[in-house]
Length: 127
Image (tube, rainbow, N blue to C red; front, side, top):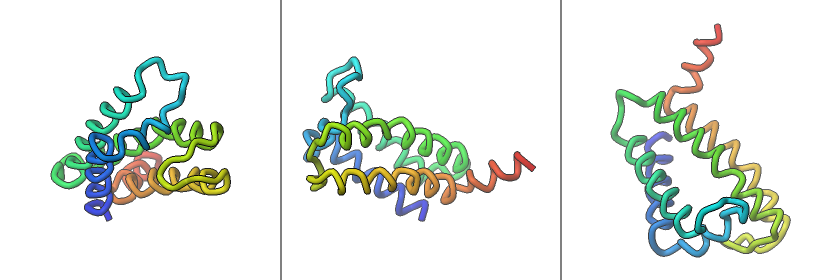
């Protein structure tokens, strides 16, 4: 599952940096004080780094999982903005579809934490 998520992140990064740039720009909240294109490019670079780390940085899996989970939290306002503004992107062309998508972000966060052992590490630190 870690490898699948890493591959997904690399594919998303390629989309950010090339063929899906306009779609990703539609998710950038208007209150971010940077150009939407720059935000998409920078997030694509971060996604590429995190995807590669998920695949190859075995000695730091927990740190990578925590970092990826934090990234998913940080980009969540874009999903909320897409829903609140009614912006069509990625085939999400109804309020219902955009609303349902919001529930997938926590799944990605848990997936990042679980597949890297970060969830287990966090539980063992608590006990």
